[in-house]
Length: 322
Image (cartoon, rainbow, N blue to C red; front, side, top):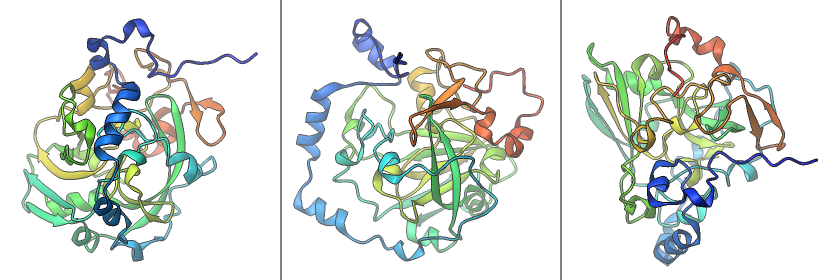
């Protein structure tokens, strides 16, 4: 007998009031929002020409794979992972690419500021000249209880931290995505606190696993993956992996992330993967594999405990998972 397990984002119709829509992470806006996005951002000839321009960083791919980071499962095929992306600036559904026709990856300027000795603004291609790209095979675990395995290309976040030279008082790194409602239709939705904000402790940001991604599957990342610059922290739930980053601010105050602002009772700062701590609306004990459709047990820290457990030693009794 087939038992259908409700997705975490599915709400009963009785709960679909404006207030509940605001408080719920999974915003199912329906056909009306999709039609609005299509009508407004359906793509012009100029936008299409911009999207078709070759990526100036294309010659950097494929990068050499780092053998330190291995998988216990097959890589998820690109045709599966490319259509399952949470990118709420563009779509409340999963297949984001059709809503991104006006999005352009160049020019792209990254600002580094706050408590640093070297505040600066860098074009993405100038930034890429200062780092060494590599490929890493990482597991990815969404808070919605699905998972995939991805060959990311990028560079350690620690390299960007080194470029900034944070002062001794800096304790956290705050990251912000771009803000441009002309190209991102849902940034016009006043119910949400745009731009998307995420944060890490400086210890997390300089950990070897924290990775800034510029490519995937051996080529520059398509837009829906968060191009031209996104974060990947594989021991944390995927909503920590902010996309389309334009600003890195070093601070002594813990940032309040996007989902903390939307629904702090369900989504917190830490977001470490833990099968023993359920989300308030669903279990985290198992996950659905996008490659096979099968369910497997969730691993503590998404299987990266040998790397990151020491970051949280002595905090076992704290609620650091959400």
